[in-house]
Amino acid sequence: MREKKIFGVCLWLSDRFGIELGSTRLLFIILTLIGVGSPIIVYLILAFVKPKDQY
Image (tube, rainbow, N blue to C red; front, side, top):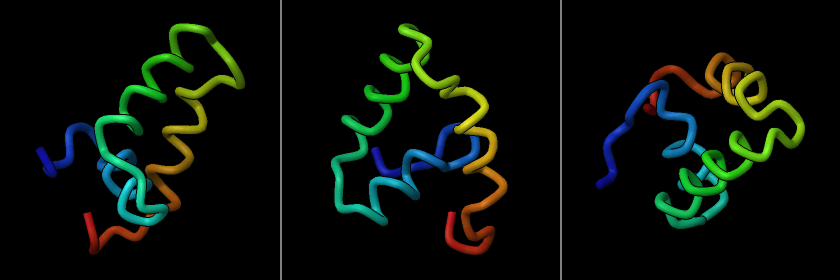
């Protein structure tokens, strides 16, 4: 399950920091449901910041 889903942000973060991909996706889902720090906006910003050629 190492394919990118929407923008590849979770895959990029998990590879960059050595975190399991499933836990990265789960963290974004939980933060979105709780509404802590507007994770959807952070996700979109990271989608434009990450390198385009890797993922």
